[in-house]
Image (cartoon, rainbow, N blue to C red):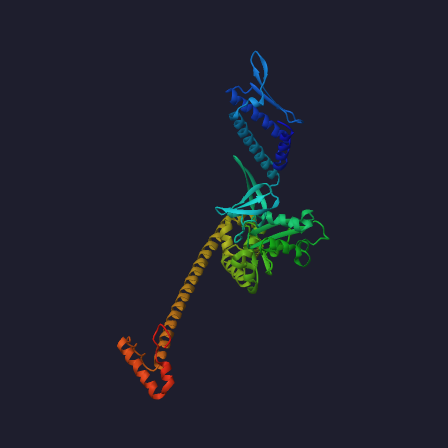
Length: 476
């Protein structure tokens, strides 16, 4: 061995991020294994090896009982021990590299990295990150995204696992933390903790809602995240291939926060029922579809952002629910106007709410007698059942009416088609002519002769000669 060995070990340590001393110890253990193989020994203490850290010289010895230490020249080792040493070195080097990868990427968990797409394996995307390969399961990919080999992939290191002989690095582009890390990179105020992301709700590939607040009154949280003319938010949206991002202002008041979370819809009123964890939102008719969003996406994300179940009603629906509640409860003996007002203040705005909260809430929060509370709940449950039946009946009637209209449209379409067919036959002047019979060779020959005679009689001379067919295979 010579200094060249040390240079090789230094190169491996630098490229694989492994401690140089660890590699030297692995080499010494490999030489001991080779010596044991050569002498067919099972004693782990019989052989020893030491490598000079400066010159690269390797000293191998054997402890012989009664004779002391016996030096073993490396040249005396055969081919089989050399192969043993090689296999042991490769195995230990791989274990060191795996441990190094595990330690390095465990520290980088939760960090956004940029890699190159390699291939798809069973739906999972394999990405080359530095000197390791990570995989992105289908569940962590943004729906609709497709990468080709060599494409740049920006993703979050979601998890690092020790899977026996390899390290599994799980990547993600659909996790909410990926959005937060992008904001930390694009918005300096977020990384400096001047602006804090209080809550987030995301449906990857479609829409994300963030609630932000500022610890500095001079910094506008929403404006800083959007940037001048939307420059900051545009970079993030481009990275997410057009995913919509709504940035709302955080507020400690749940009513204000819910109203902000439903933007761009304008909210008229917010009623909270803490017992049910439900928020009833009143919006105008022209704002109803905007508040619900496409396929319910806006209200669904707002509910996840705020932590409240959200029901959206129009003013007429809200008034009708209050009217049903009032007419049902007011008929109970002992119920006062003050009790009705306190029910509304607690967010109980329909007979369904009274049925759901039960007697205990009425007794504890409204301080009603138990028998009165039981009567109110019973009346509310009965009325709720009646309303449900009425709604189901109205729905069935609407479906039947729609089916009748669809059937009528089909009949009208068939009638119109028959009328058009009759008109076409009348305007066409009777039945269509029968198809001509196939022309026989004899008839064709007779017709050709007749045409030639007619041409000779009418045109005479050259025209008739030009129309006379010429024999094939040469000039006439």
